[in-house]
Amino acid sequence: MSKHLLSRKLQNMSESATIKMAQKARDLKAQGHDVISLSLGEPDFDTPDYIKEAAKAALDAGYTKYTPVPGLMELRQAICNKLQRDNGLAYEPSQIVVSNGAKQCIANICLSLLDEGDEVIIFTPYWVSYFEIVKFAGGTPKALYAGIDKDYKVTAAQLQEALTDKTKLIIFSSPCNPTGSVYSAAELESLAAVISKKEDLFVVADEIYEYINFQGKNPSLAQYPGMMDKTITVNGMSKGYAMTGWRLGYMAAPQWIAGACAKVQGQFTSGANAFGQMAAKLALETEPEKQSYMRDKYQERKALVKSLLDDIPGIKSNDPKGAFYFFPEISDYFGKSNGTKTINNADDFVEVLLMDAHVGTVTGRAFGDPNSFRLSYATSENKLREAMARIKRVLAEYV
Image (cartoon, rainbow, N blue to C red):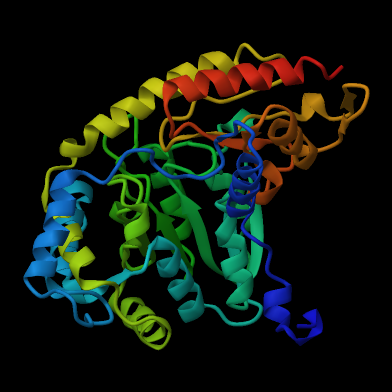
């Protein structure tokens, strides 16, 4: 079909770079190459058995029918209890919307709140889909950048300067994808002091990596003065519970926003799957420390990868405090050649790693930073050691 028949919205949408690179790695592997893929942000752990057993029990109990659009009442109540227990946030079930992944939550929010010309400040580096979802919803994305020298964290002073009369929404994640940076309680409080003063300004606080925080309990933006009515907290089951394929996310918001998001979802997908919601209910009712073995293993891997990255000349990395990513700065390689290939930018850099080292990563350009690349360490230590060795060997050829 001719491209000109596609909608302008679709033509203006970029393909997800993480999914694209993961597919390129799979294609190369299908050709017989030994490829180590560090591109997708997916836990390598299986979903815990007690959660799988809860899903089986729900199937046997007849949870196979349509669910209410915003989610089963049992799950929404469990989410409220979890938010009170872990985050000190008091919500009613009517303020909760369960979706087919946290990504759908963010899409619902943007489609509910944004009109053409509304400005959305996105803390940069950002997760790849934020930018495209905002554009698709008619908003105008505005990247607010913080580099490695600031541990990739936007300051309150930066935010104050960036706000305009058109700013309606802010989106950020903590722990952050792609950088692994975590905003401290003091940093969030300073951001809240700026946000709370501006009327009709709202924030999407993406906390999907909440349970992969190496510093302890994850502070929530909504807990600070004046922020409950301005914050939409987004979370889900994928990362902390290794439930990526279950496609279950949730949001907690002021009542009028939750109702609007349920209205949008009702026209697109309706409710998420019933038996999965019952399994999620049990997961959320269980103390988070039951999954702490995953966090602890990620922390061990982080230390390993950090030491190996630091041993590669020309690569600069911060020390991530959460999630399972590194976002190294690589501009020292721009302009270098091995005699046949030249690395001009981050796109070239990750292409070299894939084709010559057979290691799949993602260009930083997709995350709003053209001087970096992202790698996930959600895989075995043996694979990580081998991947880093390959990267070091190939990059040594570039002078």
